[in-house]
Length: 109
Length: 189
Image (tube, rainbow over all chains, first blue to last red; front, side, top):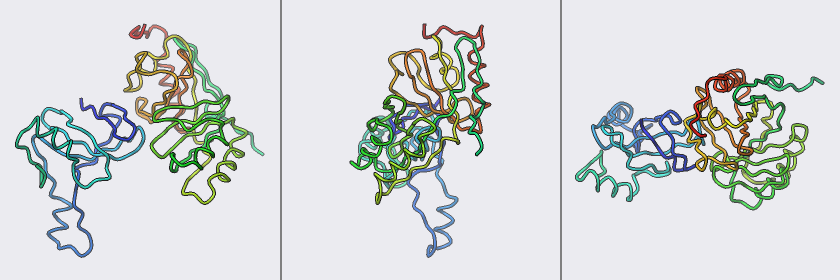
């Protein structure tokens, strides 16, 4: 079972109190972008075996969206952090590097 | 004028704990910047309570202020005075960016009392109810079986549960089932 800690209310709860919101740190392409960019934004999601970044919502709690960095194989959660950011904070990256040296995910490593 | 009626009209059940629909409760949802001085004053005026810390509930006589999220409080006042309390908030927060709504009739409140209350809640919610982990003064918004609910401990043997009025029958059924005699687990004893 996946256990996440909401960075807003500090509640450490199991998966059923949250709702997954798909991949994190998407770059949005809307009006003015090319068809390829828009297609990529809509459909080309990564589905890695290992380190992954996701959006989650504390649906049955404070209702806030946040980010989670976790391993899709072991369900280990490296950390959660607020949604008001466009890239993972350095301390989360450091934690992942300590446990999964050489990891990379999209443009982050 | 029609008479206000609570969701289940005070339904009750005696099992391993006593389950009772607590009747009408005035409730106000208040959203805004919880750190502002005006907000502090508005909450004080309306309930007499201070702004609660994260996941806390501040009680002042018959009123209370409960922390719901980083920008939301649930104010509880006697049912008859909800409109008056709302007026006080609107006056205190005039010109601020905020939202205050009387949601008294959108909710149902249950009170469960008895030595086994921790166990009854623990059967239904994914929350650590061990003494020391959850104590009076803390409020927790979570999932109760399939619906959203919030609860807090009034004292060591009394818990109040708030849910949406539309699922009051469901929540009452859940609580009664979890309190069915013979279903004691004895984990927290």
